Amino acid sequence: MFERLLRAVASRWFRLVLVLLVVLSFQTTLFGDLRPFGYAVQVLAIFVASAGVSHDLRIGMLVGLIAGFMYDAVLATPLGVSAIVFAMVGALGALFVQPFRDPPWWLRVLAVSVAAAGGEVLMPLVKSVVGLDGWLGLRVTAVAAVTLAGGLVLAWPLLAVSRWTLQEKMSLGR
Image (cartoon, rainbow, N blue to C red; front, side):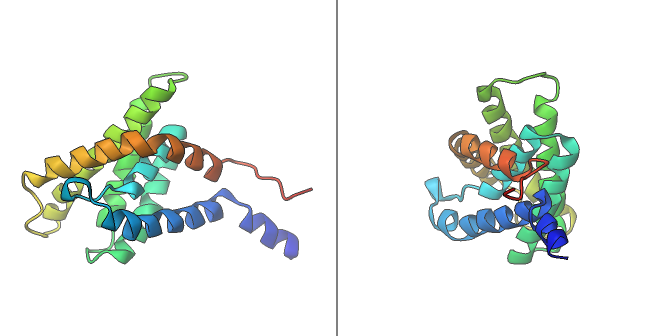
């Protein structure tokens, strides 16, 4: 029984939930207060995009779905809005690097940044579809630009974190 518990705790999905909790706490505390040009950098979207870039389309969408449901539990939006958008962000990140066999580091960073900024454009569109008014406007471009710049800075470390988090096998210390 203890062996099964150890295997479950060592799984990549358990690690993903723990890492997403840490990233979500950074999003709501530190990066909620640090607002360059008056807009918050969306670290959760950058992490989801880096999971899509460092893995494949399926993993990127699953990470986005899980992260989106966790983010919706914090926000005052209908459950599933952020999950849909973050699943698209993870898919966009994977699709941007899919044509390349081994993309260079700068292309991965650029793909993460563009996918996260694209998610910040998609978020108000999805919110307006479900009936939340007042989200579409010119400020969407400023939010996307701040997230793009934040992605250029934070993508490289978050790519390493997402690779570690989602690696297939982890030794149990034996």
